[in-house]
Image: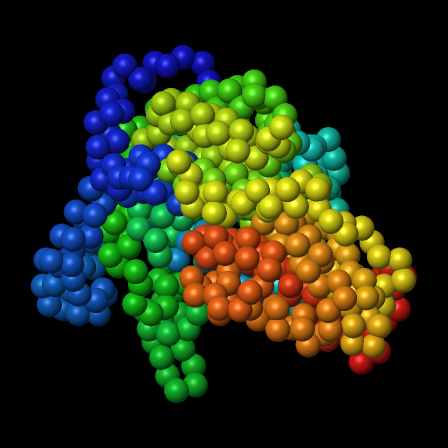
Length: 417
Length: 156
Ligand SMILES: Cc1ncc(COP(=O)(O)O)c(C=O)c1O
């Protein structure tokens, strides 16, 4: 990341004050929350929106004709329009609300792949995918007799090995799914270029934007993907709400996902007509308050600006990477330059699990484990890593604290002579 | 300063995790079982030599955090020469020790160093992993037995 051009116009300390949860002690120490890749904290604006909705507008959507139902419906559909703007979709109809990234991917696997793939077809993934962008494809591949292929990862520096990408694409691939930002390595993949190369061969593309949507500008038209999946809870929104973007023509050609209310236009005892998109994919009462909270989160993020957020996150991660590297006796994962706002590492002398337990008692929330990337871990020859993941409310002082805590951990675990 | 941490990572535990005892494959083992904690990736293989119902030899291999390694190591030193019934009883006592703050009164010797684990609920699985593998090995549960290596299949 080049200059700090946004920083002088933004008061990061004031922004941090929007997150009351950060202002507390855990185990008697000031909380340093560095597990943002798992989930983000929520600003007051989002909690206020939820509260307002439940205090004033709560009702079911699309079915009532009374005032509260109108308000709930208007709020829910406004959230859809906001999301379309957030992702620069062409129309609100291209936005389907789901429970999160996982459900969005399962929806595509079920409703698109389940009806468009046949025995012998291939699905191309990458070795750095989250389990939620692997397992749904395994399930559908098994059902229809399709095969999975993987774009390899180069090693600890965690880049996609694209030398054989075009060759891989040639081989009967019908669908290509790739993560925008890796939750374990921090790699930022060139998704626009990859999707273009896939599209040129008529291959349908899906981008997992769980780690990118709230961290950097994401524009589905620039990326040129057919589908994009994201989670509300990772971008300052509530848990339980997520988004599937789908190009209109793709959504139109898809089978429904679940059956029930909302997704139908006419039901007979034996035959039913589906509702139009996106409602066709939203059976049952949706997470109305979740969508309304998500709307508030998107407003909040875009007021700060996702370009500024990305710059801030990347700077913190680069600083953390540099300080960790200078400690020595540490294995760092992910690209040395241009990695997103997270750092995965392994100390030579202390297991990741012990690092995370110890750091927690000193107030620092890290993540340790396989980060839902077991095949990747296996490839890198590790069982788990420790991960610090940043967001715009984190500070350099918190990175310094992390380094200090790692020093204490090392001291504690080193043999006393 | 780190009261709970000192309870969890007692010197004995740190010592066993750095230099685990009986940390090898056991030639001539007649029971083997594999324990895996899918949450953190820890893997432990326990090897037994059973003479009738006596554990005449025991060892382990694998990789994991300080707690899971030390637990496996201390377990092997405690169980050598014990009967199956004694081992099973110790497992029950050990489990109670690491999951509650009310150990059941009886002296369980060196295993007592794991008393601090109960304050770290996320780490209970690490402490118990080797014991789960042990119980599978004792019961000769075929699905848990590794197949690649030479120990003979369990006779059930
Ligand atoms: C890259 C990536 N994809 C998918 C997911 C799954 O998101 P969710 O659990 O919100 O469905 C995550 C969350 O950890 C992720 O990091």
